[in-house]
Amino acid sequence: MTSLKREAVEDLRYLLNRGYPRSSAVRFVGDRYVLDRSQRLLLYRGVFPDDVAKMHRAKLVGPERVLGSHLSIDGFNVLWTVSSAIKGDPVYLCDDGLIRDLSGIHGSVDGRDISGPLEIVVSTVAHLRPKEATFFFDKSISRSGEIAGVVRNLIAHYNLIGTAITVPSPDHAVLGSGEIIATSDSVVADKAPHLFDLAGYIITKRLCIKPLSLKDL
Picture 1 (cartoon, rainbow, N blue to C red):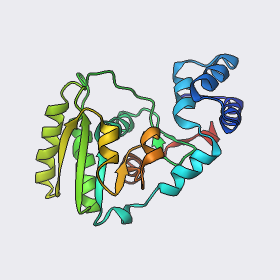
Picture 2: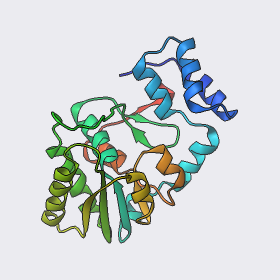
Picture 3: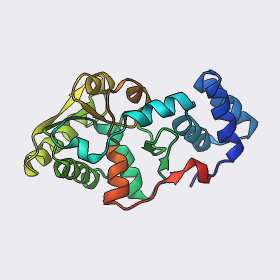
Picture 4: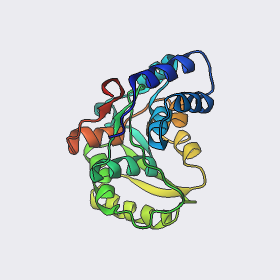
């Protein structure tokens, strides 16, 4: 668990509510409280100004809304969050109601065990019974084509209508396709019409893991 002083969270939220840029505000708070990289990342990914947090929460829909909808899935975003939870890494319930981890990806998936997480993700989507589901994977990430192929096989196995493709810009692709967007990416969440926290649903309902709350740090 990445411990974090409550004062650091409150200070950052105060600055963001007054319009300070996120990067410089996190740097200022991180330097003041001598925070390490993971603590700063938690601040960056987890703390939002009140208006943005409220906007994201208003877009969140429950699993019942996925039924019969066209669901667009930010593939690597969902996959890494679920993978982190399976590995036992901490996941956090953020200000905006979305569950996030602190993992990152830098162009490679080598060495990552993703077969289990992929099956959990696809089987969960099939259980939710959307009209159609499209998984988008960043083509610049190594093995993305192979992973998309595995997902297509799983889609067929679970009799799910949909596909998995690689694209140059997943953010743009998911926003241009589907009624409901499955992602915790804050940039996409800002623009999405509706959000479903697929990774958070899997973590809480299928893996039965309770995320850590920033309020409890």
